[in-house]
Amino acid sequence: MTVRAVARGVGHYLPEKVVPNAEFEKTLDTSDEWIRTRTGIERRHFAAPGETTSQMAEKAARRALEDAGLKPGDIDGIVLATSTPDLTFPSAATMVQAALGMQRGFAFDVQAVCAGFIYALATANAHILCGQAERLLVIGAETFSRILDWEDRSTCVLFGDGAGALVLEAAEGEGTPDDRGILSVDLNSDGRFRDMLYVDGGVSTGTTGKLRMQGNPLFRQAVEKLATTAHTALERAGLRPEDVDWIVPHQANLRIIKATAQRMNVPMDHVIVTVQDHGNTSAASIPLALSVGVRNGQIKRGDLLVTEAIGGGLAWGSVVLRW
Ligand code: UT7
Picture (cartoon, rainbow, N blue to C red):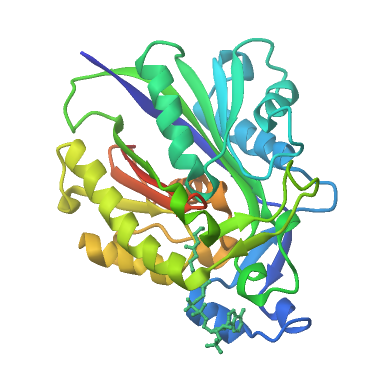
């Protein structure tokens, strides 16, 4: 018998305020048409004044727990992916732990920007496989609206806020690719690319800073690296692209999503796409897409999923799991 980390529940939260592309036409030299055709984005949600990453994460976590039929006390720990925590420290994860009323277990943040949820899943999986925990909440939550430069049309139209959460639980499998749960992981980073996507503030500057991105070079890196990491993870699981029921990609740009699917030879009707409604929510984008895909009846128990993401660092990776 092999231990597997199996998804038992999923949930998400999106802030109430929805901002359509046309809103940016009022203040910037941009258009709904440019944003739609270059990115696939039509609208995004922005957090209300004072609404924080940990508050959104808590709401998503409660929905995932409800979906799993579990209570906060049933959980052994929280792994939360974010690059926009409420404060420099303590972690947003410990804030969620307190808000859920959890009095035991561990909680910590993982920071791998847009690849954060992949890293968080991989970390939670490792804790479950080594027997450190039986049930974990894995959350991706972001308020990127707080680090956008509203005068930079090449970045501020791309991002949104939100949170998604997954309950992972230890279960026994046969050790074959037919098992439910996480089947393989591929993680990568290359710090030489730091200037491609970064925030120009932090502890060293005494400011929060704003997001800076070289969009076009990053686009080219993304298309190449995402297909490669997905192939590597599939191979590690003993599976092939034709076995994939759903690609659940990071939602940065519809053109990147399409190009990656094409390189993997997976048709677009096997790809979960939410970028039109959420924009790029960084570490929240994959759990949001998972939750929406399950709610819509697209993702079903037993389906083979490949998740993949790339972001600042650069950091990128892929997780293969059977739902
Ligand atoms: O989540 C982390 C990973 N992030 C990504 O993977 C993002 C990757 N990059 C992208 O998605 C795309 O590169 C962008 C959507 C950011 C940009 O699309 P692009 O096709 O690479 O455009 P570009 O940067 O080459 O710019 C083309 C033109 C430029 O004008 P000129 O120099 O050709 O006159 C830009 O100034 O589009 C212009 N432009 C805009 N025009 C209207 C850039 N932003 C805008 C805008 N509205 N909002």
